[in-house]
Image 1 (cartoon, each protein chain N blue to C red):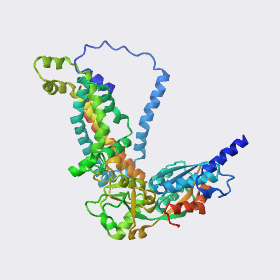
Image 2 (cartoon, each protein chain N blue to C red; image 1 turned 180 degrees about the vertical axis):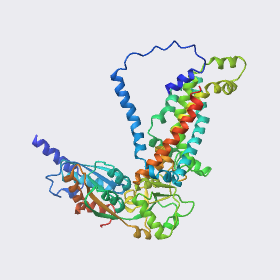
Image 3 (tube, helix red, strand yellow; image 1 turned 90 degrees about the vertical axis):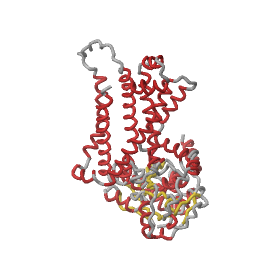
Image 4 (cartoon, one colour; image 1 turned 90 degrees about the horizontal axis):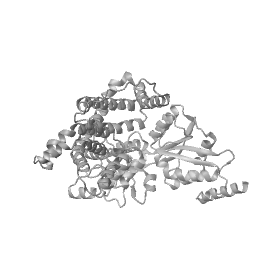
Length: 255
Length: 283
């Protein structure tokens, strides 16, 4: 039986995927069971990878994610959703949770991200900057203001003194990106990392004003975490060199 | 829906019913308990809305322009969608009920598919056909310069897609329940199928059409998934009440979401009750 378990675990580690998880990332003695992570939609690809690496480094643990707009996640957490970790795409939505007394300690900023203009592959409308999005012939999707990508877009647009009438206000950044991928809109303001992750379908057009609307991403262990040890280990992993390497590769900036 | 069939079957005066036997026996507990639990399950969430409503600021929130804009849009789109469903759905129901053709069972099954389809899936399907890059949408865009996503027309399309099966099923039920002898009499007197339809069939099944229309309108009013997927979300253009409730809730404004939900609940229940008195119980 013990031998069988060892083989199974070796298989699990082997399936972990990336080569850099072979070593002992962290002491894994106490970390088992399910870790539930509520994370901003823009973290979908990188956190999914980090989750796999984490499971490989901590045999016996499983990480499940709930990816959505940070404001929706904050609402769910404050309504009592059983989550261990919250990773938000903006400090405002994190404050919604910590101000309600649902964070365990203070949140730590783990990455930063900034906006680009996502356009269909080949940039058919020749978009070079925010000013090109004002024309009637250009359909633009933005995130709703409550969501971090929407708040950042508002900030960047007012910094650029450009007024856009979007055709839709989406509930998270991936929904805005999807409208570009489907070809239903000509442009959307999304994070650099989202354009990066969808590079086969979209091009990301950098614009100067996005530097004035950089989002800090905070992460926190939740006060009512069902798996506190697992939550702490996951946050530590995200902040570790291995976690940061995955995030940097996805296009995030170091805090 | 079974009830609707019965009502319309009863359009023709029935022979007097045998006097009802009094149920003096006790109601079995095995039936009573789950029945009461079922009732509580349906009523409690609605009671929760009422209890959690911010009564102190209710009036001020009710008259906020955002709420009224979404409500007006919801009422308009649901009404237009119902008219579209009536124009297309009644003939379709007639076809299913009165004309024998090969594959009729398949057609009837196809009509009910949107009924069991998750509305979000309906929205995706609509995008694939009527979207700017969709099968028909590409042509619409190139030939007429019309794109449906992100327009109020798109909302009507999404609502009609989801709501029409309710109307078709109700009207088909009414047609099947209606006495065909009147139609046969009209035919023997020389009336063509069209004249028979407009002068005999339609008046005969009017209560059934009204019931189906009300059901269809209520479904259109509550439509969410297909609308947000296909038509998007923008205040005044595509943001109906359900979308406004969702966005408000997602934004963390719980009491705002409760107020919007209450408005939708009160308006729809009031209108349904009024229509019910006028149309359905008179049948």
